[in-house]
Length: 108
Length: 113
Image (tube, rainbow over all chains, first blue to last red; front, side, top):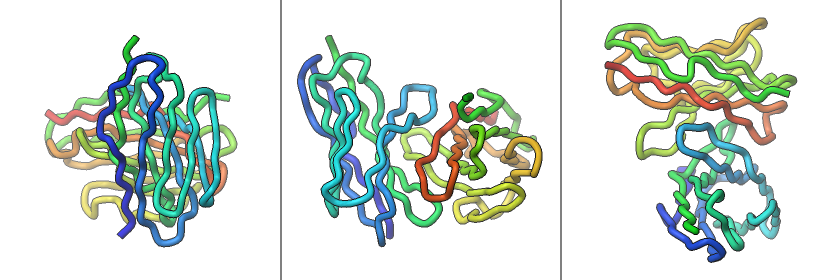
């Protein structure tokens, strides 16, 4: 069964304290792994797509990496505005299968 | 270029009433997906549509739920005879092709009282 597990469920950081979020997946034939950011009361905002092991993508303080079993979202020197829930999803057929997300809180 | 537009943003229905949720995809996008997000749960796929066609409805409950994406106008997710368990946030997403990233709307939050 296709499955996505994200850890930790919640993460509290001080401003400037770098860390990583984990997304483990099992899927028959990975067609794409997606990272989204979701703010309270809003829809998911697209961040990255990764297609093959070894691929990396960066955007501002965020960097996403992919292996054959998991993906990491590295956050470098986070700011309070990075506080949000980060969602990981894999494409299985026509649908995206989402993890439950990691809620990140960054305090100044 | 406007993003994915969903309306209404909030919808309150009494048990037994019908709920209609609308979604206008991004310009140039012909693929529409509906997802449901229950409290403390992840986003769950419901249905995938292209213009005038339902491509995959494997995540849609067999009864009371239906979806359409007509040639003209927005995609509609319809829930008949709503029950309390239907209370959730319903998100629509669109993409230009089948295999590319999907962009989400702000969602419709349905509350059944």
